[in-house]
Amino acid sequence: MVFSDESAFKTISHRQKLVRRPLGADRFNSHYTVKAVKFPAGVMVWACFSGEKVSGGLYFLNKKLNMNAALYVNVVENYMLPFYTTHENAHFLQDDNRGMEINIVVKATRKLKGSQEEEEAAESPRVSTSFVADLISA
Image (cartoon, rainbow, N blue to C red; front, top):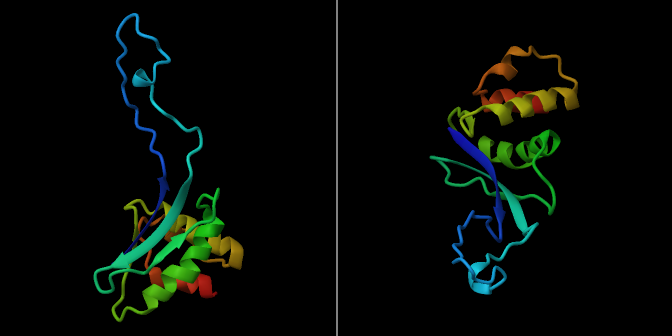
């Protein structure tokens, strides 16, 4: 089984820190305030791994980009499939235990490549990676 996931990492987390200020204290006193940043710097990272081969590597998205269907298809084609083909046994792609991302890959690949495959495969929460590879190579 090949696992993959993406996550956003921020330099400053927005924890809801509770600050108690005594009655009569100056509310602008630095002792009773929490430093905050509206838009902290961060990076979005995608990675995959399996039990056979530890890591398929990391993919860092460009600044101010979020993962969308077209970008996900690009990541799967260029990063996940080469990692998948190094495995000798048949494997399945497990992404977040939801299948939502793989549905995006299947649907977006069909749209980009013009494939007329049945829609039933896109409804499955776990789609064989070889199925995705066949769609992309079509």
